[in-house]
Length: 206
Image (cartoon, rainbow, N blue to C red):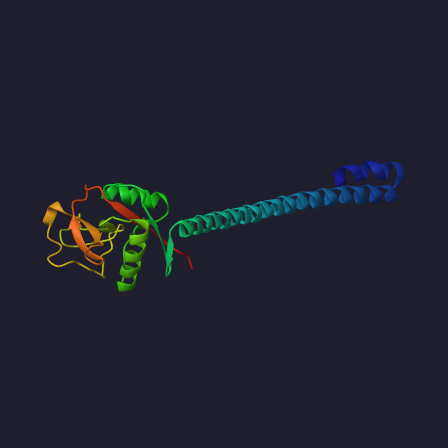
């Protein structure tokens, strides 16, 4: 463009006008290039800010959901009882083992599983207070997959066992486990379709 404009300008007004024309054209070209770069940088900054904002919003939602879980757990602990790093909450009705398991999971817990003698004692005490007159209730333990291999709801083998004398004795007919108050917290196997009371267990986050 400068080469075409310059001969015409020189023919009329000489070298000075030619130089001015070239200068103006260069300024326009430089200005246009600068604006394009500025737009690219601006778009990049907007994309970066959008990405940062999305990350911050996702983080906030995660924190809000965590707070909701803690508040729900606090409500459970207030209604039930706190034992070490767990909360227990007794059921209000009778259910088959599978129904009891689903109910506890829907509330954010599992059917209770005592892991040591201290938890056996704590369950005895809480069971007497919250389930008066109830002789036995479900534990979250079964051997439905492999006979004789007792596992929790996640399929993990139970390392602490507290069987009553001559238990388990139901073979393939009785694949779920009961906590017996009359046997001082000892366990027995039972048909999973029996209707029993149960206690849900909730882990307190650290």
